[in-house]
Amino acid sequence: MNEIEVSIVTPMHNEELCIEEFYRRTDAAMRKAGYSYEIVLVNDGSTDDTERLLRQICEKDPKVKGISLSRNRGQCTALYAGLQNSRGRWVVIMDGDLQNLPEEIHLLVEKIQEGWDVVSGQRVNRSESRWLRLLPSRIANWMIRKASGCEIYDMGGFSCVNGDMARGLHLREGHHRFIPALIYRIGGAVTEIPTTCPPRFAGKSHYGLSRIVDVLFDIVTIWFQNAFKQRPVYLFGRIALAFFVFASLIMAWVLIEKIFMGVDMGTRPPFFGAILFYLASLGFMSTGFILEAIGDTMDTVMRTRPYKIREILNGENSSEEGDREPPLSRGSDR
Figure 1 (cartoon, rainbow, N blue to C red):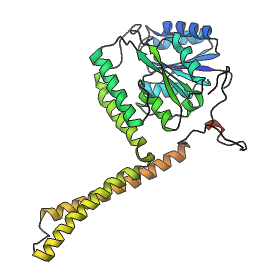
Figure 2: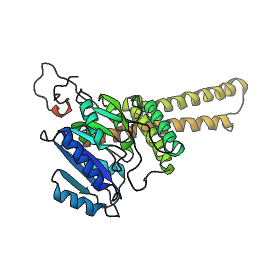
Figure 3: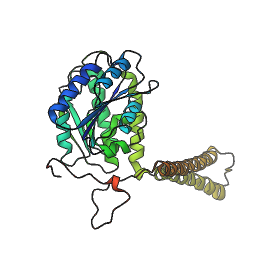
Figure 4: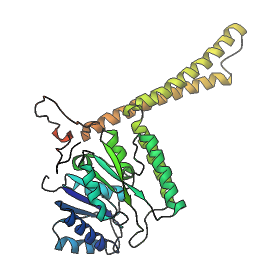
């Protein structure tokens, strides 16, 4: 793995008009930067000429690794496949439509050598529609910052990630939208630098307003994952306790009226309301316990570690060597 410094991972779906230009400019930019590199292009079930062109590129350049998925699975799954098949010390994630400039890859790589785990490209002077792309993007990024606590202003796709951490991520559909937040959650050091965002080189965008609902659910998910120290029982337990206390107050009220005023309680709406709140309390608590068991099972099976070791002092060789930060190169310091 140490033989390759930089892996460029790029999902592509129906990008026949962009793929050759993307390869040419990326290859030229990396040669000029002087890093050892590989280019990992993931064909996400394209129905145009993307796969044929990818084969041609791979045949003439061994530094290009082509991965073709059996069918279209979405950007996040394609990115996940690319990350898992990368080998670089640092992984650069970028789109294939050339709105992320290959000529700026070296800026991200140079910054990450200062000791960061993620360097995100903050797009400036974007040429996209203000109402269809810019405003929704800014709102979504603001919500992600509030939900995750990660102060990255642009969670967009152009970023450079510590290779071991990138390959250790378990990405589910939609997670590609906030990789810096995922790294931040486990203790990674994140930052961003300004990058340019020109118009698409060719073809049509695959994004539309229909994804707004998906993004909203993704943000709610990341809030839930970051809230209450990733313990579902803390959240659902609090809700269950609130329902239980409220039900108990109602029940105490109807009991007092029954004892001291002789008011029948068995047929009154407040009595049945209290019963419903007791049942809801039991349901929320049960949900919390079930989610706890599922989370423990997933962590055990996937060997998930919710932390990142920065340094071990006076310790023997650890079995968690992969969790440590790699030594810095090219004379940079933290």
